[in-house]
Image 1 (tube, protein in one colour):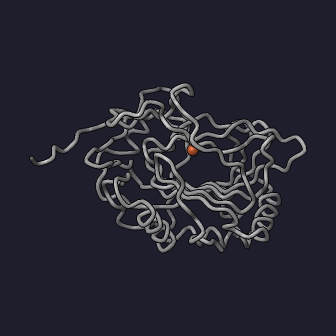
Image 2 (cartoon, rainbow, N blue to C red; image 1 turned 135 degrees about the horizontal axis):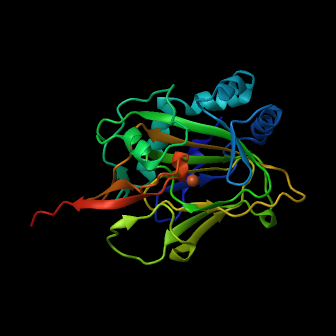
Length: 292
Ligand SMILES: [Fe+2]
């Protein structure tokens, strides 16, 4: 269903692999049909993105009546597929790369990251204090965006290892809705912190991807994996159909880069919101001194 060997690394400051025609046009069109036929969506976010999320009753109903979506879901929702992706990253990015300090023990097909509104105190409780021995799960949603959809530059939730996007429709460049990868401006050797939502003037554009039918991107959800989507204009253009997902831990990822460790810090707020709206920054915890 997916031609993983066609995914190639790009020049970036965090690990990214991309490819075109990874999924056939026929499969993409079937997936579009299935999403279009879905009578209900779980939520609408970011100014116009309707989602069917793994974990909801709606999702189970959708999967049971959508043959191709079910096939794609079962492919992704397996330890063997995760291992293929992980191996691909390991071979493409050998030295000096970002790694999770604790390797996941077990892949849990049934688990998913909760999508409910919490304040920072509740979120901290959910994430816990012990980050060792994490388990792994797939989070995935089938999405369609209408005009107005946009995403300001950000890094994803702290429990994510890999994120991926599958584009099902072709969007002309003039209609926006492209995925932009960013890089922090100053090139410091050692960063003490990575904000979740840096200001736009702190970032340089690294690469822009116009959604193309059948193209796929995977990236490691490292502290510096800044990305966003510019405003999508629907005029004379199909809706933006896509699948978004991640391989996530059941606890926060402690990221290791060379000898440095970065730990997440959740910013205090009384406001109840989805975890993806919470401000969390990765802070340098300590670094091991090299033996002289
Ligand atoms: Fe994101």
